[in-house]
Image (cartoon, rainbow, N blue to C red):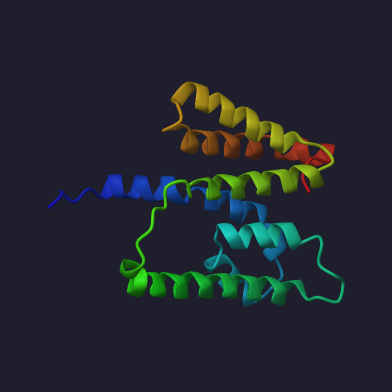
Length: 172
């Protein structure tokens, strides 16, 4: 029976979900003008959906409607998460196996997203801001506590430097 700690709960939720700020900010222009579809696209945004939509947004054939494409990607990812969690909750205790070593998957996903964006950019200002911020905060705060401060620093730097970066052609 732990005490109720709303501030600690809020901070923990913020720490875990802060990456969605970056997902949402980078997809603002992509979701603009999609009408009613935009609401589900925002609601259904997750790591996997972001990586597919962000990677595919400039590679879709001309005859594919990007709004419907993104809606189906979001819906299918949402459906897979819900059905997978349901099946896992119902049958998970029947199949016990060691999951040690699977934590690399999220790291690999973020590296792939970073490299995909890096290779598409002509100028790498945002990549440099992200890399320097992450390494600097890692050195200052350590591996257990650097991510939130690094994300805040990246958000602040990109917000403050948005106009010069856009003028220099650094955003996609």
